[in-house]
Image (tube, rainbow, N blue to C red; front, side):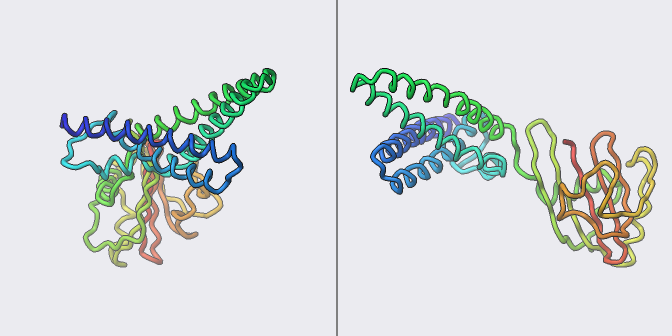
Length: 268
């Protein structure tokens, strides 16, 4: 484990230096109006930045692993909320170096006002850069991997009180996100034989506080959950659904016509 920590630390340092090198090359290309090489080096900095993020998370969140690659950490780091922050971070770093380069050139030519203005602009750019890097690191460290099929089916059994049927055919598994604090969202849609569909209308009361008041589903409204948030999950009109929002939000619907069951769980 000690050797792996040294490997991750060395890889992180090498990736960080490589990322900064690509920033400098991209800024130099922009200064000389070489747009396409500048964009190429900028994209390479995004890739090496992602590598730094991965190795950095491995250092902060050590795991027992025989190899360098961890699928669990990779799922956590490269979550859908992570990627949009990498590009603006690279763009801001390149912009700051570009401004510093022009400011230095202006100062060497004794254009002090222009050099001061460019230096001030570079300092101002540090504010959104710091914010973006903080958010990126926070999301990468505290965002966990999506839940697996087995975890969702286990949650279905715990929440509804029903055993997951062996005859079920999974139509779709939707995992939204999770974090290190135990909060996560996920949904599962599966089909059962026609004779079993009606049995799921008799929920164990102990698993659903406040009783099992079934309602008829309409696409336009549903309790306190906005169906437009998860449009791929919404059952068809006419389905019967029950919902609870005490310990955490859980939603269960049965569509007898298509013999399809819809289960959604969220603690956000």
